[in-house]
Image (cartoon, rainbow, N blue to C red; front, side):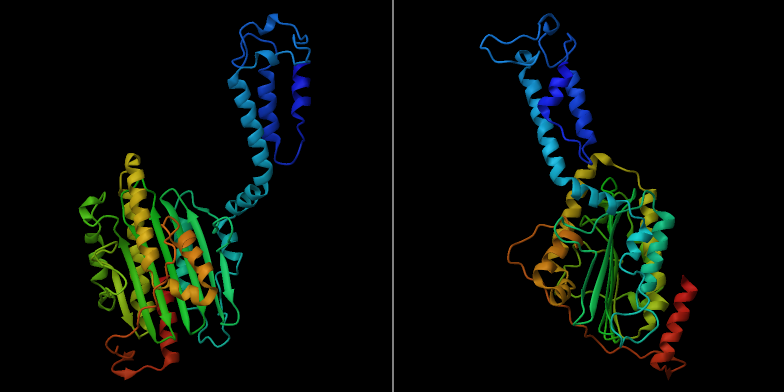
Length: 408
């Protein structure tokens, strides 16, 4: 039959993952059987018999009547089949990654970590792990359509990296949901030397809303840097779908310890930062559990509430996506924490990590270098005290653990 000849000519090999191609070819081949209804063939195919052509070459029944559109369709099928064979392993790998549950992705690298990579770390729990754990629970309970996205640029898997010699490690998760185009979370553990928790929530671009940015750093268990903010996409707040600083002010007003001003050495606080940013440099670790943790929870909840209350504007999504790209480019060029990653994992890896994962829509500039970590100076901070008495380090940790337990 004509169908048999077509199948023989195409020499289709049944391989795993190519069933879709076979079905496509068979469907196309049926269009070549004699019928006046075929859109590929001349109108009078049914009247022609399967004989040799005038030049003596044997042809399939309808070969002389296959028009340019039909040939183009067959060529496209061949290209699809060839490409499918080459990318099938990558597709299967990506599908396996995407199908992971949040719990599976989190546990893949041992998260949540219950101890530090450094045996000298003081404390039963990593400093910012309560933030990670609460965030995991919050997302699972409140976000719809939550799913894992591979932490990869196609060549490098950014989900985990470590430097055993310097006793440092980092884990990353990337997710998406109906509310947020991209959610990324990073935990960096280098013992008492450095603890970092970083998270960014990009609203779906159909919502003209700010990005939620969280950056918590601790150095030598003596100096702490905190940034939590609704990072605006526009210089004027009123250009967003709704005003948001009035929602943040009552939260910020509760915590005098989080009302600092950032240095202009790395950022222009009028670009991609709000007036109600939580910013602080401090030396009292109790601030982390007493003030920062509840303030962080309130900002995260308020950001989601804002998304839920905003009317989607899909017609403006392309423009908002462009503003998110501008945010990524600005941040990639100025984020001082990225110098830390270069020092630990190498400049090439860090460049890819910053531009292909942290700020994956950023425009990369050749020869760009990372800024150094900001100085952690400033006026001396008062020591933790109760009733004016100095509180020993161990007692501080006990108080901090109790504060976290009350707020979870």
